[in-house]
Image 1: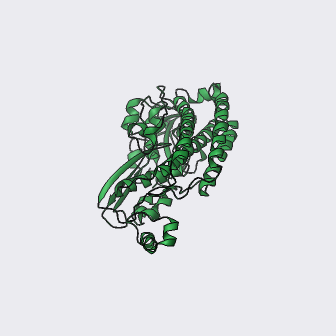
Image 2 (image 1 turned 60 degrees about the horizontal axis):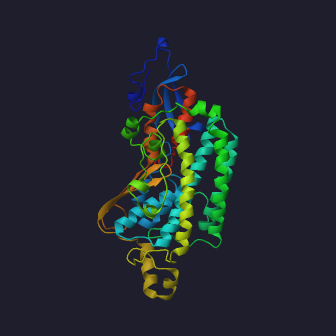
Image 3 (image 1 turned 180 degrees about the horizontal axis):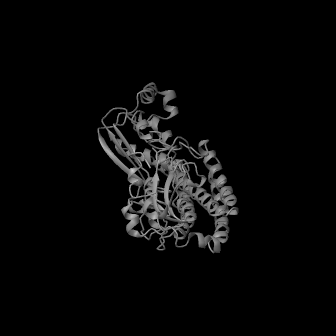
Length: 408
């Protein structure tokens, strides 16, 4: 059998003689349980996976190269399209990297609003994961319940920025808008609602014998494997490693907030499920602490740095120089100092990092993203062998990968 050079590394040890009793199956890239354009080449011995090869690149859009051909502010909405389930985390990670590059800090009220949006977005992402993962395994009711609460959270995002999925709710240097009237009261009501609903989710799943049979001792990631594949987020914490960038390399307001980092030493899919559920409680704890911080902060929303950041609308309407400066920043872009920076933040899926190199021009000389889903897809080649074909769907869903941030 003739195979292309691209596939030779995978097929070089596979023979197609009948007595081998193996079969190569393509799982994806159009399979609904692949959670994106993932192609898994699986070698099966009966129902058991003996070899797995993840093949990515079917969704490639050249986002990083686009970023090198856009002025810094222009690229920010494009980051929405990476992890589109948690757009604000992408916006914030990129904005934080550029702020470090140009040496400015967002005002306190802007940081409070950003952190509120980040933790609300974390809850949205976790609810989406819970709903789709449970549906993959065969639990229908929890899909409907989790999406209901996710819609309420997306209502809050829409009330703030006008968008439900791709938010662009953060700016380099701060945020564009203050919270609308009544938003805090709606947030408090939502926290109260979700606090009463998560125990219902847990009642449906945590001790459900079918759920436990499908997740327990499935997809075991030992600590050594997790570290060697550069896992992060809950994929790492589910293997007993207490590592969260909000605590280990704190940024923004997180050093001032009191919250715990849930971990599990089970190393399996069930342990990671427990971590996801616990993290939603911690996000609500953070949101409760942010409400008084917001009320105590002043009203400034953008950093004052005329060289890099446009003035407020009031100043542009009353001061000629501010209007001219805004025109230059919009049409030509800011010119950061020559240098390079790498900033990593804790997105809902793990470590999301942006590496930016500036040569002093309005365009990044080099822009590179470090997306957690890429590594959590690569680990499948070590993780899947030895599992049944039915467990492949469970493991892919449990790892919470999204291909918008893999095929960049």
